[in-house]
Image 1 (spheres, rainbow, N blue to C red):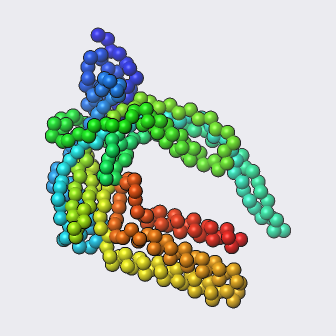
Image 2 (spheres, helix red, strand yellow):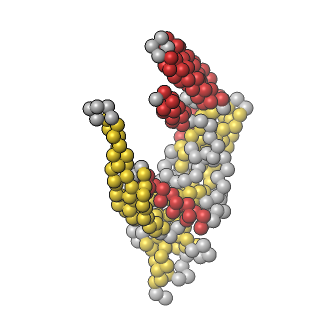
Length: 334
Ligand SMILES: [Zn+2]
C-alpha cells in the first residue's frame, strides 16, 4: 500500500511525517524520533527515554534543598520517604500566527512654557511568529508541573513496561483551543501596541501531538511535615518542589520589611514640615510595606517552586505588588 500522508507532525521537531496505513510506529525522517500513531485519537505520540536513575534523582533533589532560603538544617533533618519515576502525558502543539496589529501610542511632552502636549503615534506591526505550546494532559495533582520545558532527548517506548504511565484524560479540542489562545495572546504582547484599533490575526495550529515525559517524584519529610520535589527524567534538573523555609531568613526579612516601612512613615512625618502631603505619602508607603511584608510571610515558611495552582506569594510577585503600590501612591500624590 502506498504512503498516505494524514497531516501528522513529529512532536519533537514539528516536521511533517507520513504514515503507512496499518503501521503504528515510525521513525521521524528529520530527527529520528520513534513515533507512535494512536489510531482513535489521530495524534502522533512519542515518549522520551528516562535517563535518570534513583541516585541522581535524589542527588538533584538534595542539591535543591540546599539552595535559596530553605531551612538550613534540611539536608541533615530531611528524610526521604519515596523516590519513583512516572510518565506524564503532555499535549503539544506548534502554532503559527500571521497578520497585522494596528493602533497607536500616546506620547506626552512638555514644551518650554510648561504646557503638556499629547501626540498620537500610529503603529502598524506585522506578525509572523511560530509558538510552541505544551500542556499537561492529565491531573498532575500536587506535582507542580503544567507544561514542558525540554523537547530534546532520546525517544523510546521501551521504558513503558517499567515506569507507571498516566493516561491522558483531558480533551484534545480543549488543548487545541488553549494552544490557539496562548499563541494569539503571545503574538499580541510581542507587537507592543498599547492601544489597538485593528487586529487581523490568523492562527494556524498544526496538528496536535502527545508527548510522554519521564519525571521522578521525591517525597520527603521535615519535622513531621510532608514535602516533595520533582526531577526531570531527561535533563536531571529539578522541575518543581515544596520545601520548608528558614526561620532565621524569615525573621530577618520581616525585620527589614518592618524597618523600611517604619522609616518611610517616620520620614513622612519629618518631611511634613515642608508639605503636609508628604507626611500622608510617607505614612501610606510605610503602611503598604508593612502590609506586604505581613502578606508574604503569613503563609509561614514554605518555599515553593514550579507551576502550582495555589501558590503562596513569591518574591517576584511581592516585588510586583510593591511596584504597583508605589504607582498608586504616585498617582494619589499628583
Ligand atoms: Zn522529528
